[in-house]
Length: 275
Image 1 (cartoon, one colour):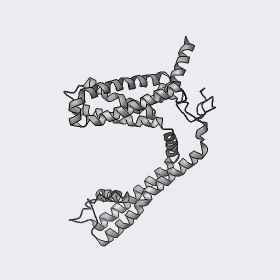
Image 2 (cartoon, helix red, strand yellow):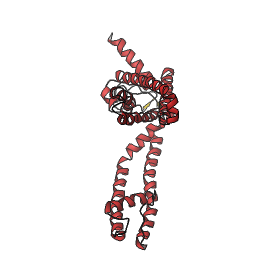
Image 3 (cartoon, helix red, strand yellow):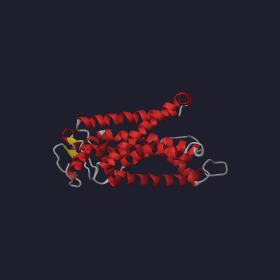
Image 4 (cartoon, helix red, strand yellow):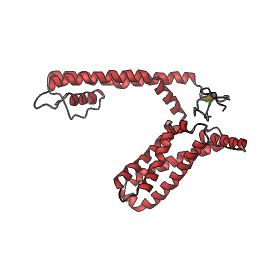
């Protein structure tokens, strides 16, 4: 009996977490379509003229999709060795957030908690993040971001120090009774807006010295975009050299949920569990 359950769970895991089999691909495509439909429904519900006519149908379709996602979430918990590993993973949290709003709306009711319900219903748009699991390149991007995390963190701290210094300097130069630079925090806000090349224009220097510094900050803004982009691009290039897509498998480990295995791999290279 135990062997039958184990075989059934392994088969279920192969379908839900893998995309190497025909049934696995059908499951992924079906889930993909439901995610897209669900996100479109959330958008259409926000249009009053459309929601007034088709609101009831939207409600029924949403519950059908929610029930499907709920079953999917439960099955994912069943077919992994460590459910807590999946629950607290990125995709596990997204999957939970994607089904909670409908149930919160059901239990809270609309009459007394209308504003809260509307806010929770908007959380359904987070289902769009479930699409990431269908993109093989997303794993490579996530690996590159993790590998460059330390470098980007140091760069962000450097940028924070720069905007604090520039903001304080601009407050010293531009600050005055009739100036927009009324405080150091507001001046730092200007520095951030200028350095990131957003340029709202709600605050602007009027003195020659202030405008000169502003011009330097604008030029420095290009580095804010170029440096982290270069760091991540270099990591992606390195990961591309390490991984060969032809030898890549969509198998997922039932224990640690990692899925970056070679096609001929029989054991997980992270935890040693049999694949």
